[in-house]
Image (cartoon, rainbow, N blue to C red):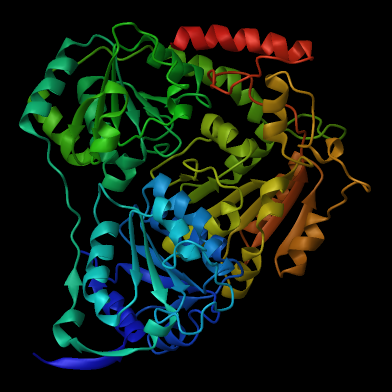
Length: 608
């Protein structure tokens, strides 16, 4: 057996550079790195010599670097991914939030945090947490509950098993998610005689799970017995590349489609069978269809509470839940009749068996009524000089400036709900929402990842001042990397979304908007100056008309272009939507809370 002598870090980097997709490109498109004493010597030196096969990118925060990596793989429909490395201690724990985001969204991410010395000779090293009762613990054990696969590399030769397992996890449609390889810092620099065969090029093919015959038969019987079915399209439709298949299936069998946050843009917004967004942030057209449905066919959805209206949306007492999903865990949720299958394959097999079997599609009037209600909200105001713009008006301006190549993206705050309801997606990939974890701070880094995934697309990042303040440092990364993105910051002076939720549950406005928080001095943050100080082209729009002018100028920019606009924190789209289970206190001195509690119990009783 021929061998080659390399350090463990060199071996890891060489192996990862040889893992290929079906399209003949490396599965890992690069690695984001912030170096410290836990990874700069071993892994850093190895990456320096591999920049042609595994490019290294540097950010300003470990969490946001991982956000960029996750947005990249999400926009690539999980066909390619990225890695991220940190030092030990705070650099590693900064990544735990991103690992949770990846786990919840079923996204591949390779996390390589430095770890303590395997020899334990210099214990306790700088940034080492010491468990008084367990000598094997390091802070990297925090990754265990938020990783699909976890390993601690304490000997070089352990990589011979750990790396293939990591790749198998990240490329498996059912088990896909974050992998953590905690890499002891002394082991990174240790040499070993590796089999040359370990570094041979390997292609990872997309596995398409086919349905079990028994499950298929039962699902077909349920569909044929239905009178008012509806399809709930989730993110799995995109990951499977099944958007065209879904459209053909819906058209052939006359079944309406509603879209989750992750599934939005699976069908064009104006397709007759696309009834719109579903659930808590859904449209009246989609939710009406779901309330009446006697068969709910989930395709690639994990049935999050926002999708199901906390399981109070599907009101038909004869309702049968069916779930097509690659993961058995998701396919079995809430007593669903499972069809464990790849979304594309599952729909193809169903439509072949159903032949010409078809239903009567719902009335076009439902969609017409919905757009008649909400289109005026996004229209340009006739006189917007003296009034603060609403978020709906901002969305309308961005929509009018968008093209077929525009990707609008967001993650947290007011915008996810408003965009889910109001944004009109012309084609798959035109809507990118991280709403599995709804992680504040994902937005700017995520926009970078989207642009890296699809450089030809026009990426518009929409975020509030709260999310911007939470994590804005990667704007400087976008500037230095020359990443052309447009960022629209809606400044409503605080956490407007949660302030409205607080009020809706009977609470007094408290500690959400900056005016209602304990501050000695009023907050006066100049976002134009702040973003400009990092190198972005930044402007302030006082009105919706000025916002539209700025968006036109953004198209000519060569790097990040930021538009800041003050907005009203109170209005939200009054139409559509659904009840969401947010527990209201049983006891309160506020009559508003007591009234909200009474309404809450009515909804809870209906759901139960």
